[in-house]
Length: 556
Image (cartoon, rainbow, N blue to C red; front, top):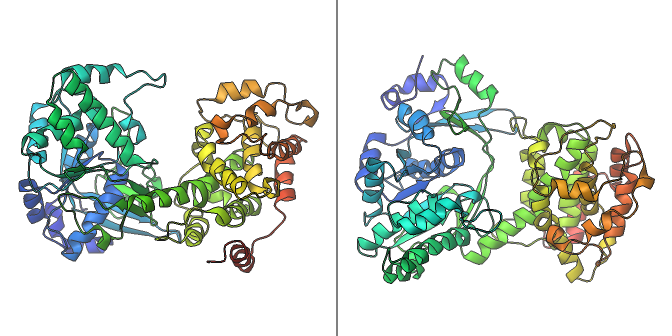
């Protein structure tokens, strides 16, 4: 048996026997160099960081293009540091789940230290202060989810913890953004040292969200007399402190049972997942899909690792924004939402299983290739068509991805405006007849039909959480699955709501088609599938796909 730790890295033959690739550098030397003169501190020690960001730095270390790793700081769940990092000497086993059903394994040594970003822990905060004051530090980065940047509650008022942090000042904050602002104040006091502050979270304009939160806290501290105004000037000077935007895309699902069993079969010890006190389901290994994208605005006032040599696209802000728009409005997110809405009604619990259903595949391809690509925002650094190709042929079909349509449809009311509304707007701006669209109105009609909580066989289903769930279901009151005549204008108010859809669907003339599709999906058992087939009567062979794309989007 073998266990993942620093000592076992010497057993090269043992790890080779169980098909695990080891770091191609002196891990102990990198650990010491990083401790003494860190260049990269990352907040958010979870799976996307370990399996993706950590893997990037491992790539550079393996190539001899860098001599230091990354220090992880956890802002939310300190059990991750204590139970996943420390017992394994900060090593991670990165497992790639490939679309062909195979796996590859690699131990990452690039994450050299893990610290709890807890203002109540004096030792941890002193170490973070030591790191942030080091002149060689080039960047601090984040994967703390979009919620981690929020200072206000849904009602628009500042959270109590944030108000307390405003009054307490630097070094005493409890909110993640207050902790970071306090660390930046330490760097300011150390000589106004330059630094890049980089969000790598999967949300639009992530750098702007991070910057706004930090500056809000700093302004309150200035106003309260906790810090001098010059600190705010330092933060606002992008030649000293930059807040680059980024786009990240990689699925790192919860630890898979098939992976755990494979590790057990190879007698690799103590790799079982745990559930932390904060209900994080995590393991000493990370399993993730092979596809990955990271696009970063190249604004690093104190230098940076050669990330482009690890496959990162280093570019300008506009290109980052265009890449994000391409993914979110055309090439991935709309396809995910549309197939998940129908997957729930057709009885599926796995995205990969849906991709064996010809009708759902036809919906995805029509939405992406035929209706999306003609109006896609082209970032130039990536091909939108090739991006969809990979999504359709490798990512959605990956049997290892334990992703469920029921999870994807969560909070759909907060997503349809971006995922579908932006495409609709482009057709309207071009003066084209939106009624010629089929897959897009099918997606919206299907979502409303799904909200009735009845599947295509007439069985009740549970609707995933959504902040507008009760409001929308109340608006749909009186509509009964199996009774098309029960739909008597209830959709009008919903479809005219530009706050939801990003555009008034009644005013632009698309509401009537959506309502027509919705009524047809009410016709009885099997009506949802029958309606899909009626409106998507093109069967996409590879040859037809190419023809449709080239006709609509000649540059491809």
